[in-house]
Picture 1 (cartoon, rainbow, N blue to C red):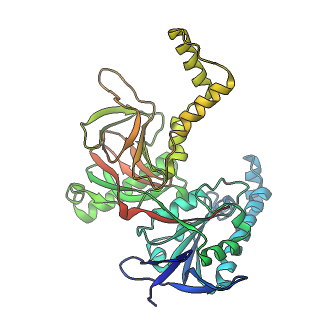
Picture 2: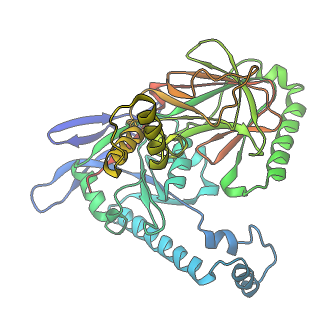
Picture 3: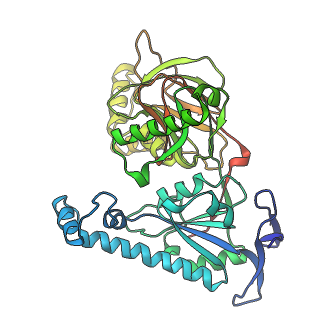
Length: 422
């Protein structure tokens, strides 16, 4: 079924186009206590659910062949509570059922898929996608949505154990029908979150991703997974050079951040970096992080934030060196610390990237002109041994010596999300 979809913002109607054709979000009539109004209502919704820790253990991802009783004992030996994991699983399951029933009561066709079953076919089928889990599930869902016109909504299904920055306010977890009513009446705002796109070229790359969440790989298994897929590509194409000498756009988008570095964290990462088409600079560090405004509250923030102890020590040195009357009371130190840390956070719709070089090594061979900053584009050439480029902490790409990544933003990659007031 095709037709034009209308979303109401007060008295203003906005048409929504999906993909290359007009898709099946349609005008619906939602009955409120007053007069009916037109609103946003998709015909098909995919609900993508996280894999709970209980499911992970119970389904023998790690412990193939164990009985339920053996699993209980093994978890107890590890200091984990079987009953506790089951309780959290039941809470998550109950909230997913609540979401699904609420949607179906509105006449919406629903498909529930586990994160391991979530693929491009599911994305194409759905008019809108609901992430049922925490921020990790939301990041996975967003990574495969390449159209900026397909809405993605996050619902935190275990708010007592998950922060859920990217999800609806936690009260809508148990009051999801209220959220649907607000969508139906147009009582919401679109939040267009900028995302990162990646082009890969050169040798030492593998465009086949490894899912870190589902496979829970050890370092050895992670390396082996990349090697196997690289060999498959070589057999199909003859050589890697012929296939990837030209830039290849990866079929994922990053909502939070890209991290580039050696798989073994104790090994320094060696690479060259060019910022905004500037000169190439040799770097050795603990890795490179490049984030969006959405991701500026996540890993990037924790890489760069200052502790009050550090601020106090710097101010104390400044006072002794200058003789200035710099106050060293807790209130002033807290104010300076907060102001600096708040400067690291920027808006999700900001079109800039923010890069951070973790623990740069500076000597006569390696330099670091700037450790962090806002940019439009970053190019990185790998000189690493066993490195990876990780998208939003969950999807890994091989990134070894000879690989070149171009990291940028495009307006067409924006993610359409919903902003509801608490």
